[in-house]
Length: 295
Image 1 (cartoon, helix red, strand yellow):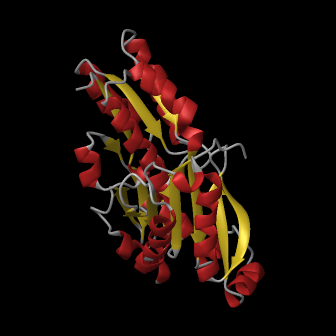
Image 2 (image 1 turned 30 degrees about the vertical axis):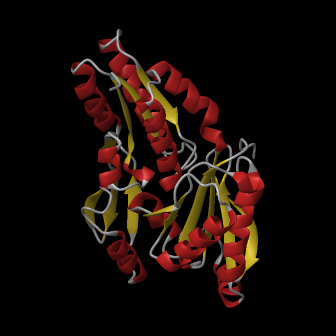
C-alpha cells in the first residue's frame, strides 16, 4: 500500500464505485440548477438524465470550481495523518481549479514543510481525466513512489487523447460557442462538430462532419491515426456520453471491431454536470493513449 494519497476532482467523471475501488478520494465541483445549489457528486444529488432533462426544459445551470479553502481542508486531513499528497485537477484550460489547488498547496507547505504536496494539471476533462487517474492508480499500486508518479504524470499526460463529437448544437448556441445562424444551418444540414482537447487543455473544433453516421466513423479514424501502435493499440479505452448511450455503444462497437488488442472492453461512463452543463445532451467522447498532443 502506498504511503501517499492520490486524489482528484469529481469532474474526472468515473463512478463512485470506481473511485472507491481504486482508492482515489475526490473533491466535488459545485453547480446551480433551477435556483438551487448542489455538489457535482457523480450523480448522487442530480442524476445526469435529470440534469439534461431539466436543461432541455429551459432551466439554466452554472458551475463553480472547488475553492481554495476546500482544497486546503481536504489536503490538511491527510497531511495531519502523515500522508503526502499527489492531486490531479481538471484542465487549467477549462477551469481555475488547478490555480486554486496550487494556492492551497503553497499555503499548507508553510505549515507542513516536511510533507510533499504535488499538484498536476491534467490538461484533460471528464472520463479522459478519469482514464489518466485510473492509469496513475495502476502505477501507484505497482509500487511507484510519489516522486516517480508525479514525474510520470507530467511526462505522459499529453499522451492521453480526448476526442468529442456532438449531435445536438442547441447548447453550443445557448453558450455562445456558435452563432444562432450557424447553429440553425448546422442543425438543418445535420452537422456534427468533431472536437478535441488540445495541448493547452482547451476544447477546440477540429472538423464539421455531416451526419451522425459519418462522425461516428470519423472519431474512430482519429483513434486509428493517433493511438499508440495504431490498430495494434493495447491500452485502455474509455468512452463517455451525455444521455446518448446508443451513440456511445455504436462507437464502442466500432472500436472493438477495429482494435483487437485492447486492454479489456471499452468502458462507458456518463458525462457529469461540470462538463455536461456546457456540452448539453448528445455528446460522445473517445479517450485513449497515443502520440503526444502537440496542438
